[in-house]
Length: 219
Image 1 (cartoon, rainbow, N blue to C red):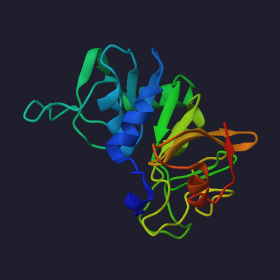
Image 2 (cartoon, one colour):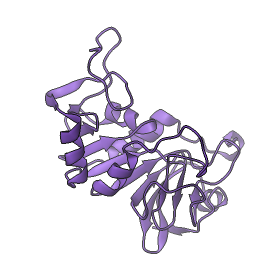
Image 3 (cartoon, one colour):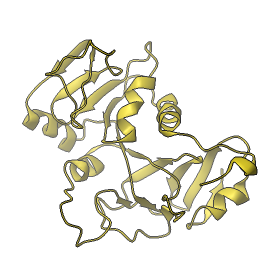
């Protein structure tokens, strides 16, 4: 996506994570998936109580530890070293998934390959015949959390749309996504379709629609 000449600059991975972190309310229990979602913990304000969960058995994840201050035994589900907020805890994997499947998470933030206008999510494989890919805990999280926000690039590296009328990749879960954060915009998934609630500075609505296969609606 070469947009410097167009007057706008897409967000990077850190920018997308920071933008999403702004919208997480006080007191929510939040799971952060693999990839960009793991960066969200670094941008949650220190004075806002958000309890970050990892499905391998942690509650209360804080920002990434400083270099040379990592605990080699404390990792998230992405095998990244993490730190704990005061009062944080860790526990059995089975107990962690009981939290997920029991509907105790206010929010799950997942990466994505594609999101459809009805909230369908594809985030684990590019085809049914793809070798070596595993869905992991994404299916449990997508259906177990009270709401799912997806953070991803707006288009693929070769310019193909990811925001679609209908997913073409194998689904992780159907009609589970309520909001999408991309490097260009924030979109709510509604019964009417995708509603644009925010865009990066300098980007026009028509330009955003040109990068998007599904019809967009103004807020």
